[in-house]
Length: 375
Image (cartoon, rainbow, N blue to C red; front, top):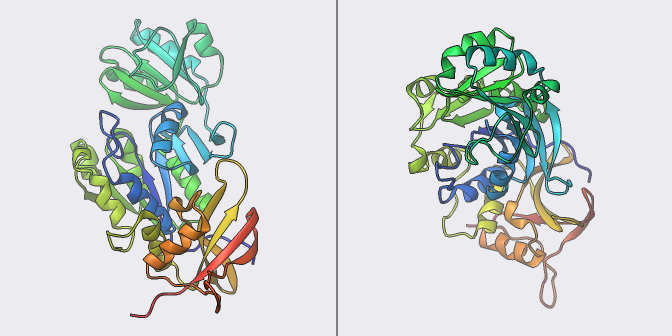
């Protein structure tokens, strides 16, 4: 029973972070992590797409339970594969770099007191002067302006009073300029934005263009919203962002992203445990016969659980069961019964579940066939 591709019913869900999944105090609205787990258990691909640097994305991704899969950061300049087994917790898939020297030179001409920060991937920033801790994600190292110009960069930030008035002058150097506020501009390579990076991810995942959903609240989300098959603006987004979206959800204070996530999964009994709810969601979204597979191995995910299904005579992976990471097989059995999904048992004695050995994605694998209980 070898793995093929994942099932074709999935959707790619691109989610901004700040103002969409976390508020201004860096709080995640209650229920967000559970909703993301259910979306993933339904077989959908969740891709974080943020203006944050990689150093700023990683801790939030961990808090959201998104430690596996693709992510786009630095407004599309960097695409990574999150991987708990990697030494740093990620692998760089693509870094879109540019020569920062021309735009820094132009910035110094139009705004002589401008502060400059150049992103150091995964670590923080090299800066021309000290920035406040809440202005940049990650660590800082102050260097000479000549050093900031010397190497290709994924992204740089420019901070000066009213620098937004000079966007045309800066764009004339060939870079992409994304305004964050009147005194702050983000600079990336020509033609780089969240939508460009997300479409590369979509193609790599084999997801059709019309099976994409994007949720955001900022000016830097406009390209992403135009790209998505279904675009949703947060309630507190500026008017230009709200007018660009197919629909408007609640504000971050109202946990508006939750209703969007809920629309992507079938309704399940709210009294179910998280593990049982995810198993029920996986079963209801598979197009055919379902088995739960548990892979035992080494490293951060000593044991993980996935839903697999039979399609055209081949076994394909449908979805992860996020709460199954590290769960004993007995707990998975109990959760399946809680979800109303019985499984084969022995005929004698304690009638234990009949797990079958499988080979494939892990040093040791076992699977448990599920069937829906009769009404």
